[in-house]
Amino acid sequence: MLLKLSAAQFGMWEMRVYLDTHTNCPQAEKLYKKYSEEYKALKADYEAKYGPITLSPENSDEWLKDPWPWDND
Image (cartoon, rainbow, N blue to C red):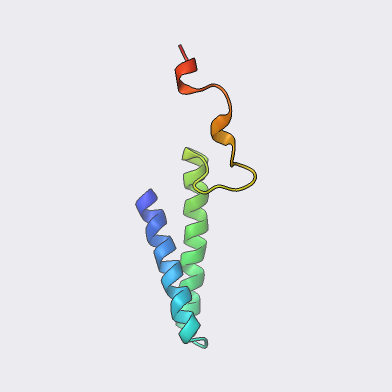
């Protein structure tokens, strides 16, 4: 799942860089939108299963909350 997420992110970034130099390319815009939507969906699925993939103000201290792994006996 993480590999698919990384691949979609890479495709999105590459299309963004391509669009920096080819501003009027409808195929690149279409691909960028496709990879962007795919990335958002995969990220949501991944985070639903495994938790946040990036830090944000909402989840930055999530790892501090109890119980800690060694507290479960």
